[in-house]
Figure (cartoon, helix red, strand yellow):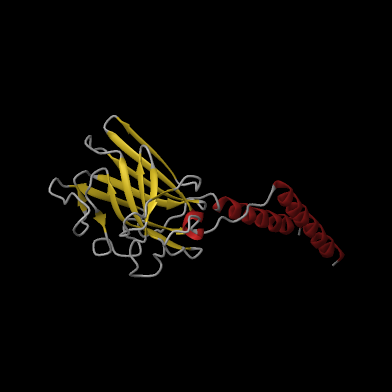
Length: 233
């Protein structure tokens, strides 16, 4: 009987710890988190025309969400890559046929947000937590983008895009990165995955150590009471 109580206690504690650990894991839609854009010197090089599947400069895209931030990693090994990324997102990707409704321009000197197709909608995003790191080293250009989930969920700047319903998908719809070729689009990369997507949700509060201690004490007390009941029986 002691063994059964000990096993019950261990299993319950392990389940609680696994739930806490899962909050720190990177979560991404399993269909596709990685996309490779092939280099093509003949790819269109401009903002006009239909987006394609190749670009003047080849690169890889990885999207994920760590429970707090939507992360995009873009890496090119082409020595001619330019240090910038213009990214177009679908903030309600769980609804099919919506397309991009929020864009960001990431450069070495500034970050702006804009509404695709709306001239003059660019605004600086200082203080929102949106950030980038752009490095060029040994022929490799790396753009690492961090966008807080709250930007999609709450729309802190009051921009004209639809807020993401909590626990649903945000997708990267279009990318104009490292060169002026535009890639993506639902015709080339079917929704909702497109160039990569991830589930965006509000961060769950993590119990403080004192709360965990009380929880553990409660489990021990419950196990003790259960043991006494078995002994009396």
